[in-house]
Image (cartoon, rainbow, N blue to C red):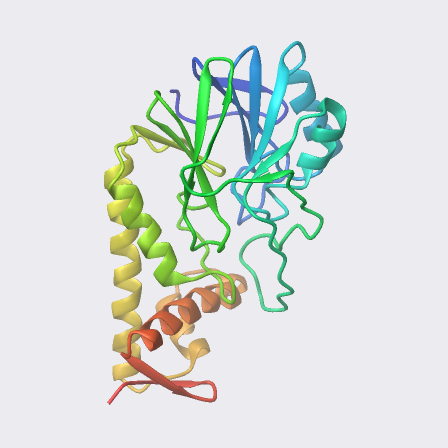
Length: 288
């Protein structure tokens, strides 16, 4: 697999004999170069994370799958940068929408990722370990809650490839934003990946992860570092999230601080469940 370089939207790139990827034109500080849609298979194709409902992206998917039968449209989760194009692709091809369960939460807090796709309606929800098959391929669901409670990864069996959606990205850490994002679930899902023998990850944002185990270990270490920072701030009497963010993320663009606060909150909620911290109103303290 080639590293991602100067890669335009609307053009497919072969990353494995059975896999091509297609970049949506939705770059942002939170999507990196945009959402990557993967096309698995040859004569029969699975469209994985169809992306945002942008006419030029839908047209590119249809052009890339012309001459093949689209057997399934798979969604890792239903944020607006992942699932909305599923409906247009389904309407054009007749393929079923399969994958994560529908989930839609009203969330007025500052986000560091896309909001939910409220119109997502899958034809079939895959449970952990369930699979779909096409000509020359089999794709199994791997439940990885944390980024969202309904997040799935997809394993292309026999290849060692795992489509990781937003659970593991190739350019940044994953957003874990309450109320649906759950830090404890996210950490368990990272541990789950360590127990697997995948050879490479194909994320929805950023380049392929060629050394998956070392990458996941680094993600776990980063989260544990943030947890230690939070406990240290609390130990110094810094009990408000905004103050912690200003200290811990002082080198980060201040426009991103509200979103960083959601990550701090996710850690605090996990620490609270573990009996390590308490709160009174909006002030947090170390547990006695």
